[in-house]
Length: 82
Image (tube, rainbow, N blue to C red; front, side, top):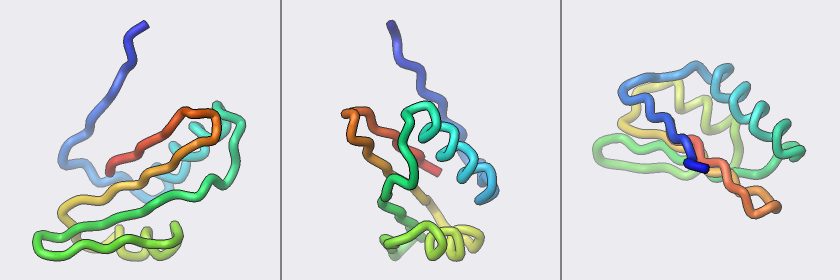
């Protein structure tokens, strides 16, 4: 069965939409509060965050790219590139 991937270029989702998407994935996989890696880059610098709150505080500011990576114990992984 083919795997589907959807890319939204030049779209900035609200933190609420992103959190809802992560929550939906974790419900499907029956996982809760899985730790993640949160990164934001500007044209000349990049930051990695230890928690979601710090990430979203800077996410609402200007950035070039942002991503969230979450790995799940079942061998499945969810990658959210913002």
